[in-house]
Amino acid sequence: MLGDDENNGVLRGCAQCTFGVFEEQAAKNTNREILVEFDKAVQGLTADIISHTAFGSSYKLGMEAFHAQKELQAIAISSLLNVQIPGFSYLPTRRNRLKWMLEKKLRSTLMRIINSRLASRGSGYGNDLLGLMLEACTTTEQGGKQEQLSLSMDEILHECKTFFFAGYETTSILLTWTVFLLSVYPEWQERLRAEVLREVGKGNPSGDNLGKLKEMTMVLHETLRLYGPALFMQRKTVTDMVVGAITIPNDHAVVIGAPFMHRDKKVWGEDADQFNPMRFANGVARAAKVPHALLAFSIGPKACIGQNFAMLEAKSVMATVLQKFSFALSPSYVHAPADFLTLQPKFGLPVVMKLLDV
Ligand code: HEM
Image (cartoon, rainbow, N blue to C red; front, side, top):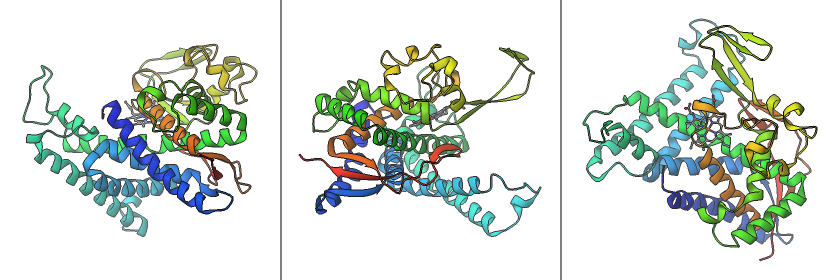
């Protein structure tokens, strides 16, 4: 992906843009407050960030592809519980036609981005995610160059979609629940603000000073434990297995529910249901009775490849918010965490943000 400095530049730029607008609006109000639908604001922000990171200069087309993919995702979620009638997906119903149109648009937009990159080969593919992927596709195992791409166009398209899908919503949800918890626990909001002002000051966060935000890291880990965006992971057994008292035959699907594991008192202690970031004071591996108890990014060979980026992104955005605003839940907030494939606040997260005195 982009180098650390470039990543930081993207993160900073996008966050300053979003919260700069809120800052201006709040400054116009006599009470210096503004009501923000925080979940929606950070969704736009993380989409912006992943589009810049993945597609760099082709960012605008990337956002078009992103919007098409998001609509497709909404269609998929809304038809999740429908009875599946064989052949129905081939009928030209209104929904199917919309789906086909969006799929076509998504494919053609991504193809335009990829083809223009392939055409610019002489000057390098670029140092964003797509550029690095294309570079890797034309590099042989011995480090030489080859004409033929080692991934097919469909595989490259699929990777682009995966990065959008995996990379934007999860991080926006992490930010949403972090702001929820810091609103409910204002003492932690104050602690984190003090840490940000001490380590980062009022200027732009950098990779170096974000790395010093220890309490912020603890709060993000505790948020991932209590309100982790990814709810379930699926695996398939490749041999007969015995896990504790359960025997699982070969070729069976196993669903691992992170929320159950994350609130297990045998693993996390009697306060498993409480918000206690201090449990992460000595690192993730020592937070519970077993070292791999936090499954928010999964573990093993299928673990999230974007986890360091996600943590950096979350710290950068939270640092920007805490530098500028104090915040509290709006009285209209209704607590209803819901399973939309990821764990989301069903009725959103309306937050009252108050501009801090400079
Ligand atoms: C808070 C943010 C995030 C969370 C909680 C999260 C969580 C996860 C989890 C649990 C998995 C494993 C799924 C499984 O085991 O079946 C995963 C995989 C993945 N994540 Fe993330 N993720 C986050 C952010 C990101 C970001 C920012 C990116 C990209 C920039 C990303 C890219 C990926 C990819 C490509 C995979 C698939 C890896 C593979 O199958 O080999 N994720 N993520």
